[in-house]
Image (cartoon, rainbow, N blue to C red; front, side, top):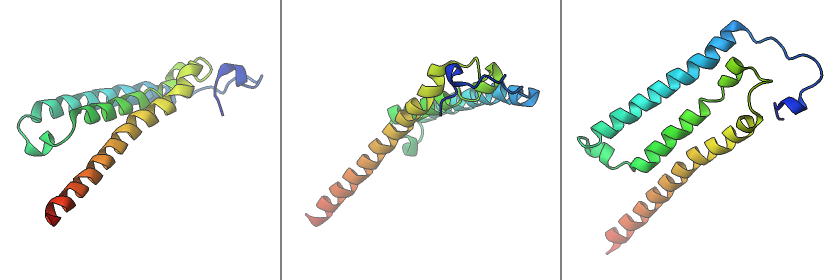
Length: 124
């Protein structure tokens, strides 16, 4: 079900509480700061840690972007549901699925190929 303005009933929209408006701006800002900080720490510490060197940087950044895109959604409460762009309402779940699903599939394939390689190396 879409929350776009052309699909809203004729009744006036419900009033959004001040606490929901506060959370609507607070959660995205805190999420963006946290994810951005963690990504910067990851990129800086990657050179020192052998565990972090094994991670594919592109996949980590893609997952971080997925979290940042998902954090846009609470802004609906701050802006107001009737004024939040319909395009964002419809595209955020699709983009988030792509940004989370792509790294997950790549990691699963990478894991499978490593198992197959280790089996062949063990049998020879």
